[in-house]
Length: 292
Image (tube, rainbow, N blue to C red; front, side, top):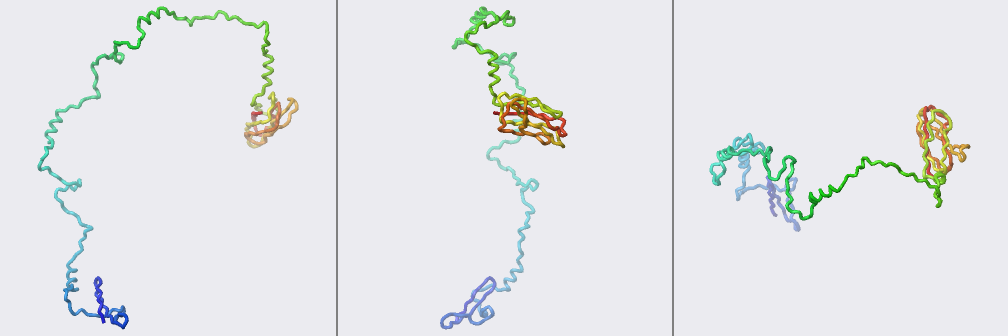
């Protein structure tokens, strides 16, 4: 049989084990399997519960969380700083009496109002430095040379110049076949321009406007209607013609207010606007822009 003793924080436990032939097993004891033992002899001087209980009754926990220093020497509690006093000066610090004596002997220099009373080679009237050219290493023009040139120059009196007559030129005979104005004007009328822009008129009543000759004809048209109609739609037609006599609708604006519309692949020479109905408008303006 063997006795096993375990010592915890505050509890001493013991188990008695016996050998069953192959293993050591606990001897029957309490419900936890511990054997009941008694300490009959103390050979090491174990602390007794009565002694520890007496000590515990005499100990009070120190409340370090609320410790406050009531008084401390050389401490300025108002400004939270230590007080010091220089009792011995081993380095020769400047004394207030010496600095005060020096301060009384110093006068601020009023540099803000300093004025240079006199300066050499200075023209105070014109605020500039005076210089004297003692040596000319580049060949500057001298007064004598310029004066000589000045005496030889007379100012051209252009203020009083009058052109008396310009002779006219008349081409009496043309031996080279110069182009005549009529020919050039005719050619100019036949030269197509890349764009055509025209105000087709402002209408206050129904009716067709003026037909305009585009000379060469255009097939891509953008036209705009500026109308103050609001309740009843107007009816405005963009019309084209190839003989300025027979007119046909290219497009129609049938709405209220302003509108921009586009027409393509309808090539005509003459163009006009025709207001079929004013709607409730009092004024309708039509403009057109075309490209070839």
